[in-house]
Image (cartoon, rainbow, N blue to C red; front, side, top):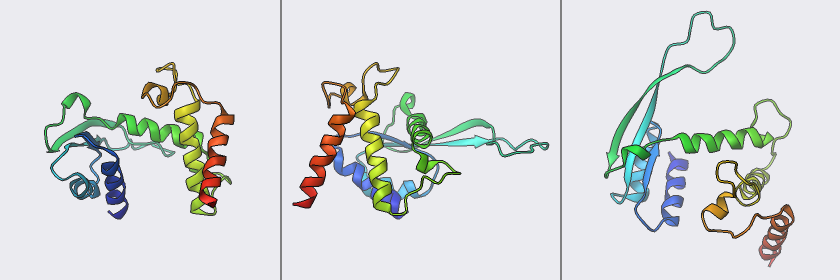
Length: 168
């Protein structure tokens, strides 16, 4: 509950206009979204319904999704945009790209600061340096945050600048 509230309050502090949020059915999000946004949000929950596993299942495989239960929590969310697919895809990309998130690996962080830095570096690369096939540009360019594809050299230079500023 604490992390959900902290995350939602961070999101709310960065957003100046009314937004639509969709979460899964985790109960912690109900209070977290209400605490962070109050009534100034269009909020829906989308909970997947899973079938029972087959009897002769010999290895782990996820249960088959047989449907979804959509519930409007507050405001007036647009049904066409009630989806968790974008965040699920982002989580999959992150897990598949950062060894620290795979199950059987020796590429782990002993300190939370190192883990945080590795994730931040990956997100910068993903959004500013990597051209996405469907966009044909970087997400930062698509969002109007950058006018060019960043090189890794530019990314490292930004990192060096941040380190110098932190030392001051």
